[in-house]
Image (cartoon, rainbow, N blue to C red; front, side, top):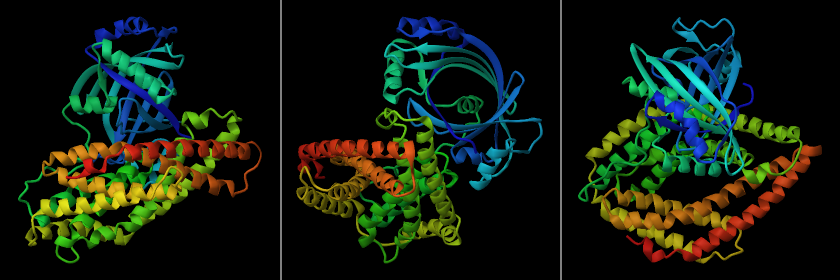
Length: 505
């Protein structure tokens, strides 16, 4: 497919279409300078399989007709914050026939990309939107620019018709700057922030919402629950998270699916290490079978971290010819595609298929196992993890190698995941302990991300790269070293402030 375009956006739901006319005046009251407005209409037809397989993989596929142009666009669909980063790929379409079903994905390069991701290419309309849009080029008080859209949407989902209005801010500015603008608008205007796309809003209002992910944490448990029953509930919840994120991780378009897949694996590992000694022999052996998946997913995730860093202000402010930056990003993206293919092979191999079929049966078998009370067992495992993490922390000083900080991060993760399990029983001290631990984990995580980026850039420097691209790579590496020194100092400062007694439960 062609290169992805980053779309950074924030949305407000307006109370009704009449509020669209006042939007420009309200923005000017906040000090926003508006250019000349332009209004036009377009029609979007959203496409997916009958079971919304593309959406499950974190993708939205639409065909837009505007004037005499027809363009197919594939974009990442999941939004997890008020300021969303979404990537999109677009391609002109000829001879569009949107009424027949099923429809083969209309754009050639998008079709090839979906085929490579193992996704179904025969789709059908799942929503039709007619939009009357007004767009303003704007300059905000802090100096950054954006396009502001006000949209009046008439949507049809099946036989249901719905209508709504929204305002969208789209910019490539820094996330924090956009976030401050969004907060200012939200504080003084009666507009509701929304994270739903137009497709999601239309289907929700029509009573046919898109699928939503399962809860990330298991349900609350009673203090009298046995280890076996607690394990069944805990592993069932984490396994649901794992299987939910499989299509998106395999597709590889939205990095957050891969991240959540790895978190689910880590949580299952932590639960297995905490509960295994009180369960029948071999009850959690299946968790170890996920190690090859975790390794393959980690290799892809490393490149996601690097590519995300290349669009951060620290990397973007280095002046260089755009072609040099593009050449390096393409090298990184090509390596990511190679690693993604290895992950897809791992997820589609017979051994993984057998594991996915076997795990539900193994979880049902836990219900019949005899075991002691879960809470007492977990409290013991939490204290073990706390003592281990504290012992590692005592070996670290301000100038310790990054590897020592990484070891502490691993031990703190184990401690946090075990604290999360204790919290399921309503233990208030576990909640407080997690809150004390989170800030240190954030600093250690940022430091490890930078270390990962350094490792990947070092490998890239060892290849044949010349000219302006080599100069940019050296500048990136030097900037990264400074960032790592700063991150190490922040992590050390936070570590010295941590009161380990606050982590007792």
